[in-house]
Image (cartoon, rainbow, N blue to C red; front, side, top):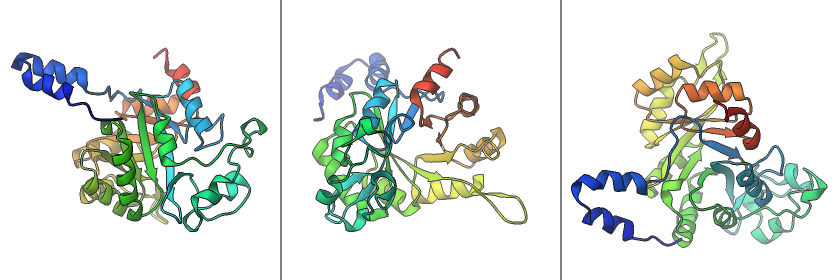
Length: 284
């Protein structure tokens, strides 16, 4: 997808009174109400996670975005898989980081889910990117350290996607910082779950700890595990006051939970069941 400078020329040439309207029309829609539904590893409730079949089904089920997990292979290729090895989703154990792409492509990543998905392959980053329809969003979860960033940069330069439709996410704050430095024009979110400290019942990270990590890494926001015991209005208010500009939540399959986080201002809801959640929320 090549960058077209025509819209920017139109903005520069337009009368001042029209500039705001033109910019609004030329910017991809971002449903900040929390209605944006992101398919977790594709439509992973119904199809084998992190396969092209799962991503295609996500679009058919009305997802606004897809999320995929990415590792670096031994021969410096980026592949879409959640685990560090292939055992759970292929039945054969190969450690992704020490295995070449050709060997990984020999494995069947679909049969574990259903015989009808037999023959599904572990896709490359490029294959996933090229499967995304125009105007749809892509959450790129990096499962490695910062070593993947230069390879990702090469892929993005080659594929030329609309960077406004991308969000890079990672649990590793070092990777978040490296991505934000390398891709200042792409949104990057730090990811975190929650653990309860022994003895005092305090959930970590706290809103303050999240804000500190977001600030130190340069992240644009945070992706929170959707735990209602922790993430309530008080938590979000505190986090926002401390300077966290936006958040999304994962992995939400309950309509009641989706409504809860939407009301708290989540920019997006990641789910294994995009069709079910879309239908459940359609009357709201």
